[in-house]
Image (cartoon, rainbow, N blue to C red; front, side, top):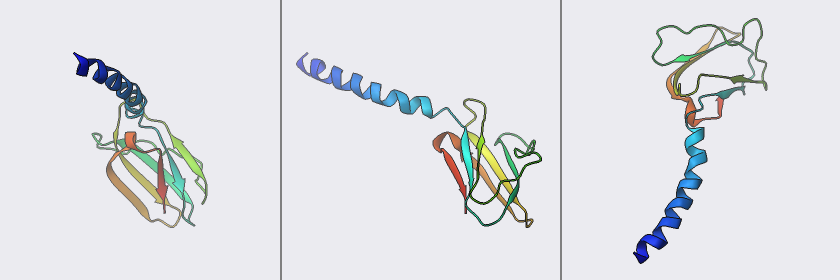
Length: 108
């Protein structure tokens, strides 16, 4: 009984500290940061379960070097594919990125 009394407050404290981390872990939204010297013309982010890239997140805009773009995704959609198209025609693709575990995605 004595161990239970000591262990219970510690366990409750740990649960209290873990709750914010758990809440964050289902938010897949993140920022794309252009840390290159090249303009980004297109950014695509889609669920890893989708077969298409969907719409260009930049639309008619571009992402200049040093700029960032916030990507909002549906709650809980953690596994995503990311495709970036640069002004010089180069592309960068990364599959199955757990965006719930990141806040920033830096293009270098």
